[in-house]
Image (cartoon, rainbow, N blue to C red; front, side, top):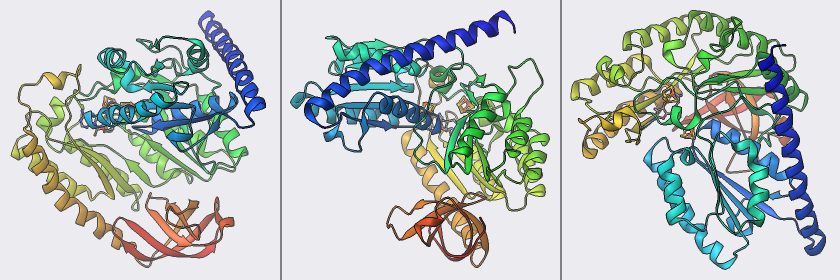
Length: 481
Ligand code: SAM
Ligand code: SF4
Ligand code: F3S
């Protein structure tokens, strides 16, 4: 074992030991509260943004439960409120500021309520300055890189008379061993890497999540194995660019190798992953997806724009031709492949011709779904300084024109599912009723159907009886296992 490896393991162990001490100290305080008042303290974590943030919140929630908090869904009941923030677009930030305004009133009536903000927004110094200046009633501020230190920071906050602020400028080593309080046992998020090195010219993520770091192969396999033992049937392997997994390792291991190994884990039924970057999506990966029975026929492959000129200025490092080539190679091996994407409308300098190229591309691919975003200026990114910003009214006109074409294409594709029998992993009750269940097809369509609660966690065959809007309805014809 090299010196560096020894250091990493020792420092990680000491981090976890210290964490345990802080967790125990807070638990003692909360237990004393319970003994006195006969009710447990409650906490709520509000999450904005992507699956990375959702998974970070699962880790925070696990720490909170170990500290003796009950999790609640209502602000009004909470003794501790955490906002885990996102700053990928300006809208995301507005939502956080709006909610901070809302909880200010609660804090005024209950000064012992603890308010904490963390996540990507806090990695930006101008935002932290704003919180310090205008949101003095916030008790604790921390960032993405020191999330694992939350117990120590909370313990300090409980006795502090000032706002506690600790944001690390850069990432440390990958921290293993943090527990997660996952919402659904059946489906679980598993980080395979952190950070991003791609620096797309519009994107804030490389600045808020730091440099790309892959988790060790064995740590990931071990986590998936232990999830399966506690009932997980499907894993979603997470990273900002999963296709560059392993690039920082000395030994030659890539994402396809990882998928192959996860595919061999007994008891696991399904594997999904996101997000894939087209510039790193290899033929080896396509072959591995097609050859691995547990890897679902689903690919989220953000294209962002259909014009080569725009892609170049976005620093995406692929052309529309290369993107379309990946799609046709993947479809050739997996004809039922469900493909979804992300699109940015109104990127600086986007002309009518560029926009037409995007429209043409979406027609060629035939997406199952697409997430469409108006370009949002992010301070500190190269594109924020581009002079040829597109006016808001043009951005809005383009997005509505695009949706007029995209939405009917999506519903038409959905209608081709009518009458088909599809494999569904039953995930939960539907949102609307406890008598109706929901799950997903392998190519990621949501299906709703009647069935007994015992079916949750099972693989079933469902006949599609009614494609409607962006969803499918059906009836169970067979329980597979
Ligand atoms: N790493 C993934 C990728 O490369 O596609 C996802 C990154 S981001 C969390 C999710 C999506 O947000 C991006 O794919 C992009 O479409 C969108 N996005 C990022 N920055 C944006 C910005 N400044 N304005 C509008 N949309 C943005
Ligand atoms: Fe942002 Fe690009 Fe990294 Fe995705 S790949 S997180 S869009 S910089
Ligand atoms: Fe995710 Fe938003 Fe951060 S999209 S990585 S939570 S900026």
